[in-house]
Image (cartoon, rainbow, N blue to C red; front, side, top):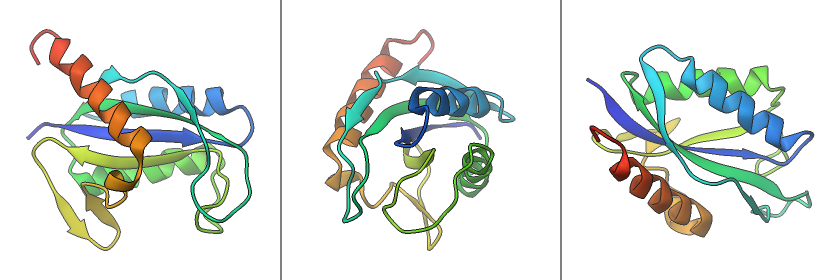
Length: 142
């Protein structure tokens, strides 16, 4: 089964644009996966109690045959290759990838929640998700 997954990309350390580009290349290279729409890149203020610099964020729509847990595992591997170290919650990071939603699948296990439980609290995700869905609707064969 293929599905469309909506993936949030974020970076607030180092060459932020390069980390987002790396994520796009690596996601496109996953088996049975291709990017079908992307939002504009947007700079946002960090969320949470840790003092840190602003994020660059982008939302992608990817058509994938991977199940949510498989996609999440692949995304964590991409984050590690980008130098992400999981330390302090809400802390700065080279690359943060989240499955925000999927068109036809849900997941509710402790390590993989789809739709993402923070979606309703992140205006920029909601805005970017709407942008990507509108672009996806313009794609031939969508």
